[in-house]
Image (tube, rainbow, N blue to C red; front, top):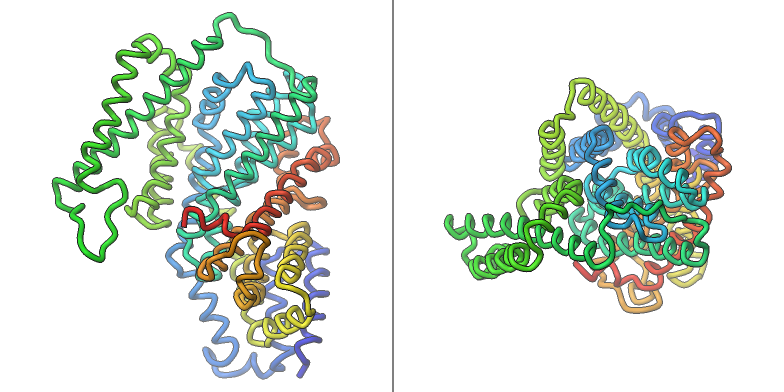
Length: 531
């Protein structure tokens, strides 16, 4: 039958053609999987004994992926994001953040970035964040006279942070496909994700200081606290949060102590912040925070600060439930997703916002989004498996290694391919189709040749490449002509804002994303800081 080079060329041209005519990626991938098998094995593979041969291998691979327990976390995180988008939790959070930064130059843009980080840490979904920020923040910025390009760029770039900040669905899929620890991926992506968010905020601050007309200050409110008083109110609110969080940790330690679960055993890692000595440490912290509120800040400041910042409590609680349960060793990824969804549901009920229509609409949107991911997963897994059986990864590896370029040259070629693919197709297809080919090549490269500064731990290479891939996908969400963030924003933007205007606003933020990607490539050990 056909050799692998011919199969590869036909596969590339056929994929481009099918995507160009608008065929969904899942169906295109499945059709091409059948084509690859036909070209490699001929028509006999279709009529062999059922459950044996190449088709049997493909079916086992698809079944194994679809029955992976961690996959359940994806619809749970999507459901949680849909509830957040349709309840008033996000709107109240925006109002609370805006109170503290309202008199800061570029304050609303900074608030938008911070809100995006918090929402990313709650659910890890991208589309809902961009739509929600477009509904809440865009009218505010345009009303105050913010530069349109700045407003658009901040919303879409910050709204795409869900790919980098845990619990990122992109990282979950990468971990499933490459059999890499998802918890380790979450831990490794913390610093790069917050680094990228800080780059956005620094850019906003510098631009608005150099060009004040891009971010006019809102009218002065005589009732708004100013100067030292506003700082004291903010410190009071931080002390309140510290006392509440500390009290919850103290109850946890007390429970472990009473039940004897925190005894230190040889060869067993102690419970994080859960051993007996933390009873008095956390207790002292709670007493200090309570003392500051009672004797330094005062009762009036406590009431005022709580009224100003209470909109942040529910999001912080959800983040604590999701990430706290994962890193506290209480649950796995899937259980944490379920607990987060329940937490958002309960909060919406307590706020009186949960209705039958809201719940049904969230469930329908969850089913639609999950169905898309599942069908792409089936098709792309079949294609990746068929191409692997045909010898594709070995052929691609030989071709890339045969370029006789240094390790970083190979990595840069891969980054370029990711950037091109990211502008043309969805991240799910990329991670399912390309990672089985690229990751084995990366794992064979000399680890000492990766990056320019520092040496990456060999056990962290797959984790580093996953974080680099997610950073690359950040760029894809803004890349013309098919950057999904642009279409998400266009669906809620005023009529006078065109897609051309939206993509124009992306340019400086794409440069910032490429700068963050460069940091990961130049200094790979940055992902190992918390590992």
